[in-house]
Every structure is written in structure tokens, then in C-alpha cells.
Image (cartoon, rainbow, N blue to C red):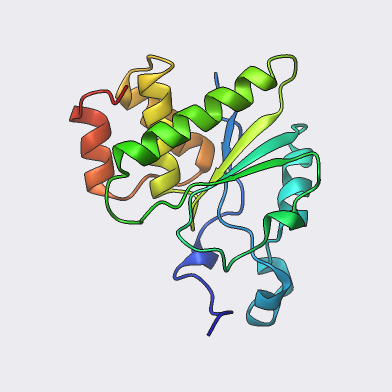
Length: 180
């Protein structure tokens, strides 16, 4: 069925907080209205709620990087016209490829260059906004911002409100060579 909920989706908070020293904010995938029948009203999380939750933090979302490996959860047209969108199909459970890492870094760099005069946030999500999201955001903080790997992971985990769970992602971030 096209409207079955992603496994474990309700177990994670909707949106984290801005990661200190960055323009990143992580969140779980918003879901279009067709999923509402499977959720209690307080469990629902759409693009409208996404924007609202970020505004409650006194922040503005300028860009969404969607790392899910499907187009079934929501349509980018549901985002306000002021929010840019990029889709980077990223397989779950396995380390992102060099191509995915390069595309993520390039996309973020371009947005930051075009938005140097503002503080608009870069929202990143996979299904739960945790493993693929955490890996690529931390990879950026380590490789581009020259952050110590353990510090990047700690900042991500604290800001997201959940810890990166996949051991292969953590091992690569902690021991792996920077991917320039």
C-alpha cells in the first residue's frame, strides 16, 4: 500500500534544533495528507507542521535536502515557494557512496553561497532524520568545517534529540578518512 507508514516513524520527534555553528537542522520525513488516516492528530507531521515547528524556534527554513530513496512520502510542491528543495536518492543502512557525499556537499555549498546574506536553515531529512541524515551532516561538519568527528557526532545527536544508531556510519565517521 502506498500509504503505509515508514517503519518506526512515530518513535522519533518531528524536528531537532539548529546544530550549533552550522545552518543545519534535522527532521524526520514529513508525510502528505493520505497518511493522516493512519495517525492520531497529534502524531501527524506534514510540511505545514515542519515550517511551523521551525518558526517556533525563531528560525527560517530556506532549503530542504531529501535523502529518502522514494518519492511517496510528500511532494516538494507542498513546501512554500520560498524554500528550495533538492532530492538526493540515498540508500538506507549502507554508507552513502562518494557520489552521494559529493552531491550533498556541493548542494549545501551552493545554497550557502547563494544565501550568504541571511541565516536561512538547511533542513536535512531521511526517513527518521537520523542515520543517513546524521551521517551526511556530520560528514560535512568533519570534511568541510574541519570539526573533530566525535564533536560533530555529539552536536548532531544533541541537536536532533536522538543518536545516530547505525554502527557502520559511526565507525566510518570516527575512523574513516575525510571524503574530500
